[in-house]
Image (cartoon, rainbow, N blue to C red):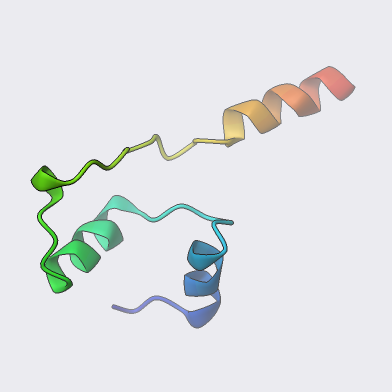
Length: 59
């Protein structure tokens, strides 16, 4: 898969979100049908917008 161990730990700790391509690869390997389960797909910049607004209001 080519994902560093530290990155996998961040995914496990929910410090980072999965890229969609990695998510699709994991679902394929584990034979999970994405269409039969409920998954929420979020934007790449999820969390950054709120952080940017908080930073701007502190200045």
